Image (cartoon, rainbow, N blue to C red; front, side, top):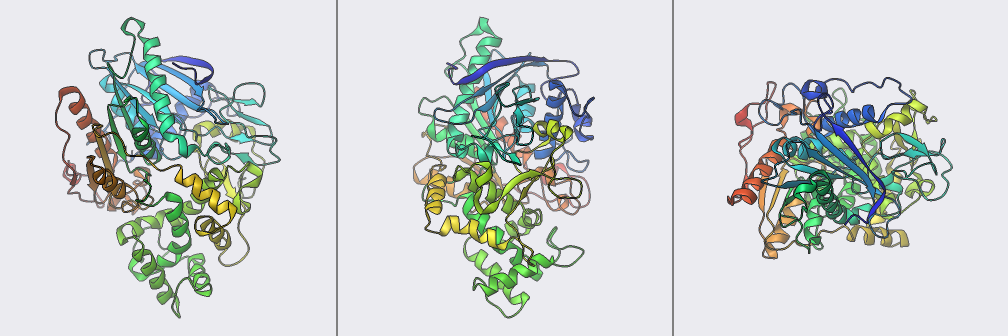
Length: 578
């Protein structure tokens, strides 16, 4: 049944120089600069697809020359096949979401396999291609993707345009759009994750199950002589990382019809009622305290914790601000930094995650995440985001500027679904003081700890995102880096696994020392030499899940791997401990 679809299904063929895995780019092309558009203001749907695939590979994968991709693990072989794409809606939702199914020409009819892959982060429809597509398509599996109500269908107020199904832009009312905000938008850019009015995170599990239904239906269409494709004759595996991992686990808890045969979740942004901490809680906490805590001398050699050997002035100002409000103690910066650090240690942060979280802090991602998620939780329209925030295009000088046609045309392919990026920035909520963002960070934190109507509404929205305990016989493999500085293991996967055990469930739980959240960051100088990638463990987990479901092999045991950072050289095969 596909009565949840909105509009038509778009079917396209992808063969020879335009395949399913890399759009014909291959590893060399994926490692190169983004492919150009022949006409920057009017790219074709094929050009947009190719560039979106390039952007999403590079967003979640370490393709650098030192990291070992294509040598020690992974690959991007040319896999011909077809794609089926449509807009779909969850019952009661304001905005549609995308679903897309890739069916390889060499689909294995004897071992029917469908991977269901929600996008990582807030990414668009190809946001899990480097994980699910790269592993599944060469093995004869079909892959069903969902953007899970997030994605890159940015709506521009100045031109009153959004993104239609093929990735090209159209005016409101001219076509079914990826996303259009409710009512008129006075100015700026509207983003589906923040402005759909739906709190999409609460429905991520339903998005995954709906994508599974779409995937089975498209297999019926692709191979009518072998239909019907059902959960009884086709192994359906949900797989995702980060927010995609959370979506897969949410689906596991909702899977009363037993659609899923297995689940693989990497670094999941997951919590269950009474265990773990939601991202909004520790993101707003980190945004306030980490700039000061990272001024401590123990982080003097930590990548991104210093600018030309010195602590950033705004971070020093944060210590002073926190001291003035009584949140840290100490008569000088050193004592105040120790006080902030002690506070973070006392509530579950450790130095491994704090060291890696320096990158998240330096890139100002805590504030970006908190503002976006607060807007989603409060179902705020673009002109009424919490704390005076708004999204807008920026010019070459960093000031707000109306987006030109070329910038708008590239958003669907280039953006990550959350600012900053692709010429769009989070604006507002700052002042001219030495610590320009602290007041709005305090306000974002108050939405979690306060007692206002908005605070109560936000906490209720967050509570609706908690994962439920899955059925007892569902095979699950979870892998997370012990150095994850965005979703600390102590707040996310470890409490979830403990909740499973308390409920009499079991899961294979892999802890990976020296792995952090963003494999795409491992090419950054001074950063990748301290870490190992997490993607190889995702591929290994899928290998194990396939062997379990296809051949009855037992799932591997939970373990902590013996890993070693690559240092200044190339990643060695022994470094992964696989």
